Amino acid sequence: MRTLLFILLFISTSVFSQGKYTLIKTIETESDYFTTDNQSNVYVVKANELTKYNKDGKLLYKYSNKNLGNITFVDASNMLRVLLFYKEFSQVVFLDNTLSQNGEAISLSLLDIYQPPLACSSYNNGIWVYDQQSFSLLRYDKTLQDIQQTGNLQTLQNDSLQPNMMIEYDNRLYLNNPRSGILIFDIYGTYYKTIPVKNATQFQPITDWVYYQSEKKIKAYNIKTTEEKEFEMPLTDFRNFRLEMSILILQTEKSISLFSAE
Image (cartoon, rainbow, N blue to C red):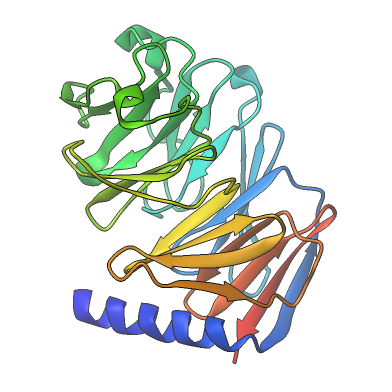
């Protein structure tokens, strides 16, 4: 299964580099943010509402919890346990694949973490949280026990640490600090390296490549070879992107468009 996944991801990155696309569907929506899972389902956020579409643009499910404020971040890397992070109230909610809530909301303040800017899923149903007070990464297991913690990450930077996105992928944790680059750690929180790409607003790891958006362009950096690429997009005025299994998804001000890569 793992070998098949890497073959499919290789195919996806290869067709992405050719820059040939066919429009599948345009979803008319003024969304704040979107993400995808590995089956090319699309998760669209508008204020406190999350909407899930399939890869053909068909609406599947909706979720909303007005008591927790607006949704800040969605991590759908595990489509059976989708993480929703509510920064304003320091809350985390987990949903199943039908966007039904799994258990009660988790208050990070009860873990003595106050106003964390970032949270994401981790292996074995864990959670990563970035604590801006200690400038450190904290990992909690499924029982909410603190089992990994980095030291002060400011010591790794020659500049201030103000990360805007964090995701775990393929046994690595990626933390984007736009002023210095994308920091990479192993799943135990040990620092590995920094990808020297600055001012990235969004990024997506795929095999050994990290695709990122900077200055209205999509670029990629190979973490093993340091090779860099830049790609042509079918739209010029887009705010966010994702690539899943040969499907490119672009968000504009008033729509989300799905393209097949040929």
